Image (cartoon, rainbow, N blue to C red):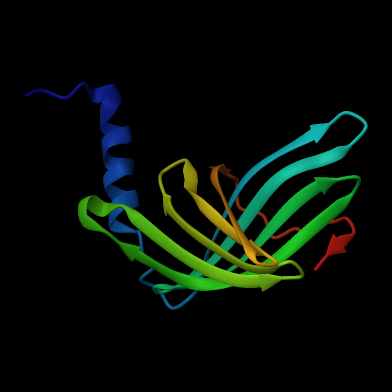
Length: 147
């Protein structure tokens, strides 16, 4: 089977991403994923997830943009593991003012996809998320926060 030369960089980059699921260096790797939109007359709405990975351990910050300049910030910790087939599986948990937050998902070349479970009072609510990989930036997040 012959592979067209134009596809070779894509194949090599996919192989590299699979091999680099768990950072091997002692310095942390930072990845950011987001789906945030500016809603007319409401401000930002959506979510941004920032992962700081050291080995298979993760510290993370989930920012939920609620409109009206409000941001709900949740600090999370968890693990990243390479599953069968090279899939990067992420498990995170933390707490905000509303209760427990858990995220279970996968990192692909371009996205973080998963399920967010939120405990609010006695109820547990789940929803799917699909966040697009963002360019690396260490700029601080702006806007009032709700912790």
